[in-house]
Image (cartoon, rainbow, N blue to C red):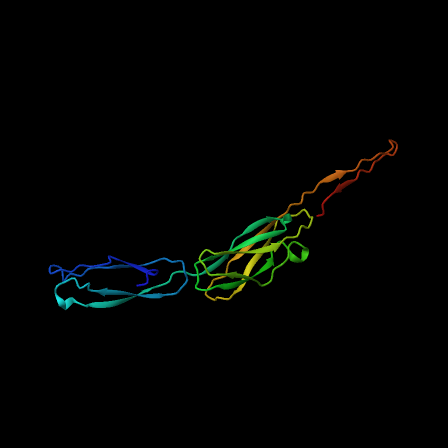
Length: 212
């Protein structure tokens, strides 16, 4: 039998003149392997060990075919991540759950959320290949370039999504969100001014060091 697909217990049965007509049970159990390999067949051989002195039982054997139905689906997911705007790059992690028998490639792209590529928030990705060897719980990373724009603004987001995959059995419906945390802080300075007391009014200038 294929020991990676199933186990059975007990490994032997004893029949005697007293119980020869009674049915005995062998329990066959599938093994959870976290591997998307489809249904698999294994053969269990039942054979006499020729320990009896009765030669009629010598060489008796039969085969039982067992099919284990696969319950694993290979899925790639993308972790959400946050990064400061002045970090330069943000790293997003893609994770394979349940292995496959061969390597494959996923193609990823970014799309605007409240962060906009054409406004200088980040550098967009388009159909960038990410290669996997096919191992369960394998991770691969993608780097996204962040642009420090000098504006005081709310935190902004963009989405990393998977557009296609070389192995059609791998599910790639997940998306990941990158949150760009603004690192700009505005301060206001007030310029010193002198004015004659007879002027009636004085103009005081306040200057912000950040754009909005």
